[in-house]
Image (cartoon, rainbow, N blue to C red; front, side, top):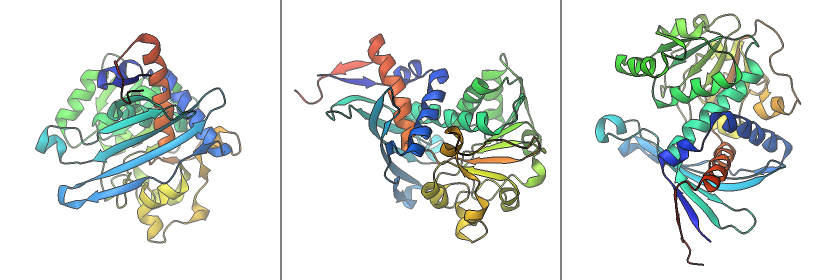
Amino acid sequence: METLLLDTDDVDANASMAEIVPAVRDAFAAYERGDAQMPAKSYIDLPQYNGDFRSMPAYLDAGEWDAAGIKWVNAHPDNPDSFDLPTVMGTMIYSDPENAYPLAIMDGTVLTMKRTGAAAAVATDALAVADATSVGIVGAGVQSYTQLEAISQVRDITEVVVSDLREERITRFIERFGDEFDVRAGSISEAGHCDILSTVTPVEDPIVGPDDLGPHTHVNAMGADAAGKHELADRLLLAAKLVIDDYAQTTHSGEINVPWNAGVLDDDDLYGEIGEIVTGAKAGRVEADDVTVFDSTGLAIQDVAAAHVVYEHAAERGSGTAFDLLGV
């Protein structure tokens, strides 16, 4: 038996967003049904390097397929300036759940970006107004690209407003998407008054307040993935219809972690988990003028679902490098 080694280009070539989005939706549904196992994400904090590692294992049974894997991923914000490396890098081991053979070892960096965008798309499809045509992006780093790519799979997006402290990031974003959408730079408030807003920053002091949003804006809060991170003002969170990806993770390290641990938010402030909505256990958007927030920490089941899509296509197309890892 052989294991596929899939680099960044291999993963990107075999990770069609049109297929990653429904696979991630299936993963949320499997988790809600109890057809997935996902131990809590574990952290190794490295304050001396201004970074951390996370290990993320999972198994899920989506009905027509099942899959297992583990991702080893970091977050080192100083990497771009200090080492010319991405802030987030990951390695995914994708295994056959029947016999545990490692089917693939693949780059997890692109995988993370793809499945993070896909999670926002699933939430957007459930919570944004049906006729949404505009997207605001706060934070024009690498994660912002897959936010727009994925969200445009579930809504007919024409207008994009992007906000970032670094003008060169905005320039790169506009150059990338200017031929596909009407893209312009704008303030946080201008981005927030779009139909959909995705925030993808690592800040610890909130930068988006309730006055920065329109009356029906849906917000994908994607940046907070570790304790202390906090992009949205507490008053915004208290007033919004608040949907989370996983209770344990969001209360520990999601957008709600800071106000939650300060006693500002509690269980009564949570509408539900995204899995409840995609399975129909709870309704998504009901009122046209609701402000909705999806608090996404990123779940291991998303990585496994995305890795499944990548591996199946790579195996069919002969992508990557096959090698005998175990000598069996």
